[in-house]
Image (cartoon, rainbow, N blue to C red):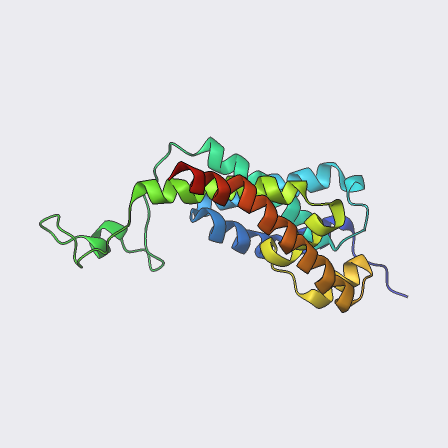
Length: 191
């Protein structure tokens, strides 16, 4: 009978997955590495926090999300000017001609006020998700934000696929009502 790997090995084996997720979210390799390192350190400092009610990967991603937010706050004013392309070529050389103009015509990046409204919308959405009853909020987060497969969620929570879809449907209805009152109603009243 083979012994299961120690917690350190299991956690370390998930490092590439966490790093990929962090890089996608932060778009900065150094910040992503810092966030993943802090996540692994937090997990190893308090392994008893993992109650085994979800997969280890889900638990670590939950920790990582908080560390990503911390990294964004910490580095919000820092601008990375040392970016390089994947092949090591300087990013400035790829984007700009020798006269300092863009190599390619740039697309309209939109209105900054619209971007701010999107950020405000995300804050309202997060508040609405927090108001969902525990199981519905957890299911919605697992399915829509962590993008876990339905089978994986059902297995973790010991529920049937039908029950999952009913609970997700109810969560979406509650979110719609909350967003209607907290975002669309407010936006509609301001115009």
